[in-house]
Image 1 (tube, rainbow, N blue to C red):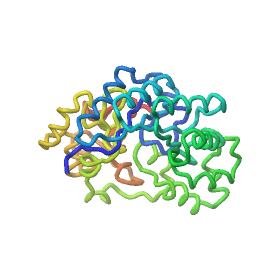
Image 2 (image 1 turned 180 degrees about the vertical axis):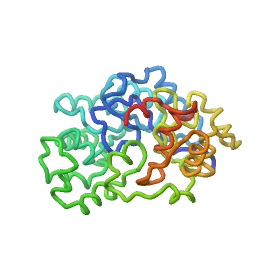
Image 3 (image 1 turned 45 degrees about the vertical axis):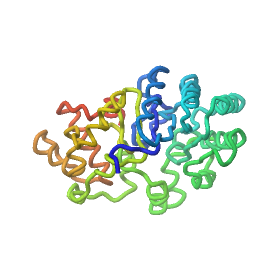
Image 4 (image 1 turned 60 degrees about the vertical axis):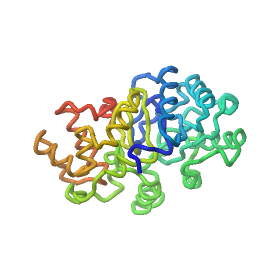
Length: 330
């Protein structure tokens, strides 16, 4: 199996969105700069995917890609021109005008978009009314058809309908309605929360915490070397798996990055994570950079990794810890 050979590459058009959702592994939100990928860079990112023998499918994402609709439309056209299977991901936070929303979907379909993934979660519904997700999903089904509309995760539609879908629903309402134990099971286990990004902090009360030593036998070789789902961002970072704030290299130099990984030449922090995992990274940070482990423990190995990296980005100079905005938006 070749290293860094994904089936699905996400192109992050912007890290900005309406939310700052508690489960976000990329720490997206409204405080990010109003920056987006240029059309030229977007073409370069899409063209770069041809380097793999089996070209991956591509999803256009964010942040919220609909904040830059013209760019989203242009990216769809470029992907269609290049013969790339392309879909988009959205939280539907932007959905306020039904007529405008349907027109957007139709324009994207005409440009060559093959599917829409609408993220449905209590974490988005804490920031935006769930009715936006519901209406956007219905419109997407009308425009693209049910077989080309993916609602992720659809089981939460029925859960969220138990509350007032016209208003945002604080996560505390789940504990009030179902009790702490059931609410924790619904929100953490039911959604399959990844403990990276801000989730280990914002949702840490929903999961048991373990000391760093509990993760001593876990490495990140599978995630970093063989992630089937990865991302290119607007700053040139190749983000493996769902590792927000951690780059294996610059996707604009993708050929060299792939050659290096095939030859097992890794950036220093990446090598530590591949061989010794977040616990090994913690030991390095403790011995060389004064990191102090959290007394209360961590919700998972990704939480441990992120906490260590938050310390390292302030105490050292590591090119792997990008983009910087990730570390400024907890």
